[in-house]
Length: 390
Image (tube, rainbow, N blue to C red; front, side, top):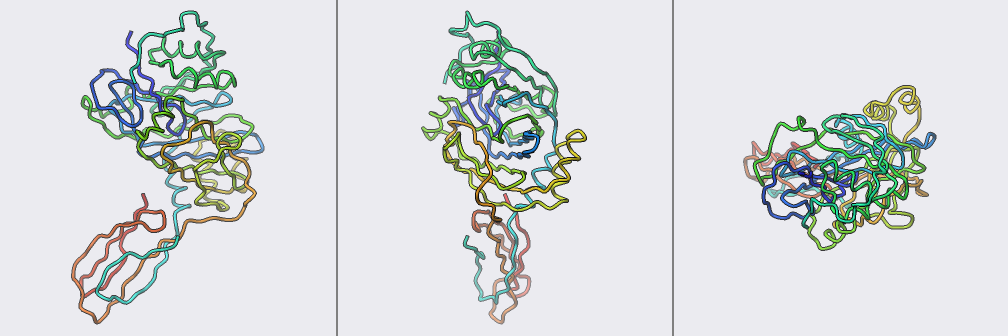
């Protein structure tokens, strides 16, 4: 039996899985891929909308994948069975515009020079060793096509049974995965498996040649006692990361809640994700964000009537300390927070002869990349032209 490969990767929502149809040799990558294939995550973002009254979390995630296969997916643990729906990717751009740094212009006489303004600012087995006596105690709660994904929500009484189910359904669930699954079966959590649908990706990579793709954003709505972000990694993946073989990647988490919240790993662990923005969300932006979730009435209408705080976190850690989930609780610090402003220098005409032409400049202002164009069609008259935030 040919098995779909199950990658030992936690990528934003949960544990990534790779689905490789035709194995081709490729070099090993830092994400600890399955044999003959790999998936890298170059950028990932998530939105958490926390309904503290109903104890419901609405969780949306998107990521840019680079893969040697057009088929891949991931496993996501949640305390209860989730309701799934597709979300417009515009949701992330809309919130990103809200939390972007303000742009401040300063005029300066040209002195013939140029500069940037600144501010302070693993081998897999197709067999199932040790699973011969495992009972098929796995319940399929729901199956659904959502956006680019085929999904199935599972609940199991024990980890060996769940791993056997994955193997029986053509996933290469290696033995090391069992300890990760054991945590969630003991907690009686639900595991939802996502995989890219066969017809969702028009581009097919050449053997061993990675392509970049961004699948549709998916909303998961579920009941929970406290909001959280799935962050835990399998032990062998933690070891791979500790060996320095994983590539650095930025994780952005936007949290819309009734107040500013702090994140911690488990009960007391420090999360390297730091808040970079926290302010009351304007009514129009809040309404737009709730509408993007595509919730059914009356839940959507009830949420729109509330006052919300938007907090953005950035996690640039490498490796990530994925020993538990990131749980959020109300912060004792309810002050507002913004990114340092970008200072753009507008050069005024000076008598000093200058260079003629246009030159692009790039640099880091505070923690944000910046690109602008200085134009000097007549002497040295500079003007800020473009700003790009990556």
